[in-house]
Amino acid sequence: MGKIIKALDGRAERLPMKQEKKRQMHDRKILLIDDQLSHLRMLKKMFERYGCQAVTVDSAEEAELILEWDPGIHALITDLKMPWLNGVDFCKKTKIKYPDIQIYALSGYLEEYGLNALDEAGFDGVYQKPVCFEMIEDILNAIEKGASDNR
Image 1: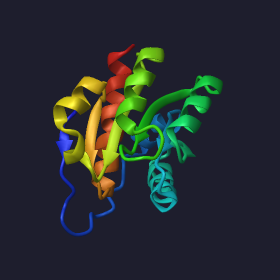
Image 2 (image 1 turned 90 degrees about the horizontal axis):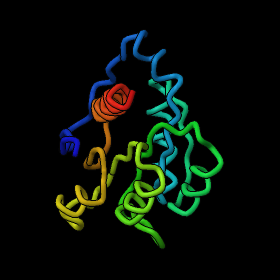
Image 3 (image 1 turned 30 degrees about the vertical axis):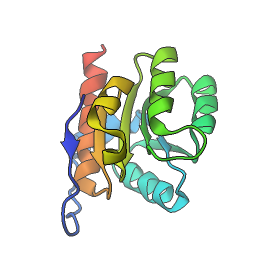
């Protein structure tokens, strides 16, 4: 599993990503899943700032449909606490059908699930909200490393 990131106190400085890396990320399509629409809009803007194509949905069920119809999704970033199908069950289900897709948890409720359960679900990384730009860059680096490991 990826490393656990604790949110930094205060505001993170907006770090410019190297132009070369930004171009590499432009061909990466990331599916963002969060039932809080304000979080979803913020995440989309943050990932797009780094040159990613960000597709957003507000439920795991909607994400399942997107995955069926869009084979170009490289990675998923999902909240854990969502109605109907939570992020842990969604990860387990998705890893069975798409074992090579990278899935990252981004949640303010990590302690409710326990690290063992998150690891067993198959997450490639687990991150604690609130999110900052340094965390986004760390997630993108993990996605890029995972993509090169799968080649």
